[in-house]
Image 1 (cartoon, rainbow, N blue to C red):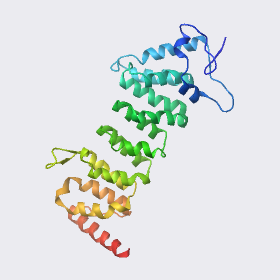
Image 2: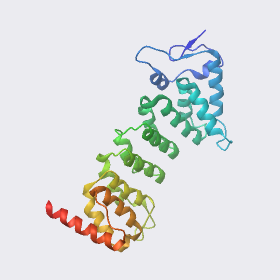
Image 3: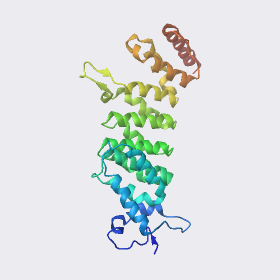
Length: 268
């Protein structure tokens, strides 16, 4: 007897673990009226898949095994993946895997559900949410990405920058610019702050989204020897913003960008 997922599951010890959540029903609903069907063997196999997600993440070949088995089940694996994502009893790296696999199996339809995990208490799940949205090319979740730019976790902030950069989300450029003044992106006490590696990512992202308002401030920074460690990043962004190619040496670059910016300012 075939069982219809989202409509009816036989009440048995095997099937009871896979009563679909509301999220699973929504993701698996077919506008054309089709249904995802399960037979008894599917339920047994899915139970094994769920058990795999409980395994130690250091188990050799586990990531490949989770991917292979989840993709083999396709849409039938959705209830398991959602369960893993939502429950803390599973190792965080396996929950990461489930998030990425859900996006791959269900595509853009899964984006609203995955985006909710950008507010998850664990930083790894927040990163997984952002990475999955990037893989799905979801460039409209501005509120999610702008909030992530202020995340307590440096890794989450870096991932948010990567999303904005790769998807060219220009409306978020001012939020990226504000990160240069956010002290959480620096280390040390208030009187002796040091730039962390994320500052370079911020500067490059400004170039990737072609934030023209940053041209003059970046030009001033590249003139200042105090920012010698950012020369390559500043030059990268200025080239992206202006479409110009600078000379090779540091001194020539400084003169080049100064003259260009002054000339463009006079045109305004």
